[in-house]
Length: 393
Image (cartoon, rainbow, N blue to C red):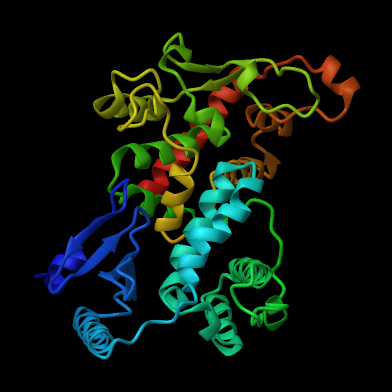
């Protein structure tokens, strides 16, 4: 039997897990630290189903037990009188058994598929997942998406509204239901303001780094610090091999792993490593020392961490829609471009652009600009490393 203290102490793990309470009630804890009350049962046709009561702490321990007791009483009543539940699939059943199979195979990105499934788990299933499709009203859907919008995630609300429309369109097309309650659901929402790769303001950097400092999973915490210190692209960091450290002070990323917009393989990219950055890499050896990758997966030897690990960590820290892995590049660029001495720029724009490994747009400029500005970049990276350490103090 669970206590509130035990529930509050439950920490997320890399894989979803469940903790039993009483009378079949249990709590599911996801990698994003979402805690959901559930109960497994057999329906009138002897098929296993899962009843979801909602998220903790919105649904308290006492409330979850009450809901579970009421549901079990209702199931007993149906069985006693030989009644059956609605034969129409529940929303969650339909999504998982039919819509995912119809919609997800058309998506090329595994990341996109994971985001869609995670958004359904987080925002939708606890609200309408257990309701039969034909019992879900337009009013419920409007309240659902407007509730998401009310949390300040306007773009997410619009995406959920769009996906709900797709789900119900497929339900109508497959003759599961006759009426479509989600038509043009986005019309009840504000139009989201489109932003390219969200990034916090420099004034909020200290709060971000203090949050990262407190993150309890060490490889992910250190990975976020490396991403900030080197401000490379996330893919470049994930596949960082120990053998790529040269002369003890430089990380040389092979050209084939760098982003290109010209169709030509870029040249290798040199990242000067400060003492602080090297200390982060050294600390990682405690966890991934035998792995070929600096940020190796703890579950799959000689494989890097997954592509969503660092992004989802930022989500868990409360930075969904506010900061991304790419945002660390924008943050570094802003800090370095704004640094001045006696009213003059401290760091030349070309040094910053070279460290960001931006491709030259002007072919003539690219052909003549072979300077690596390495000495300047070494001092620039030291300044930025010191700046980050100051945010952590």
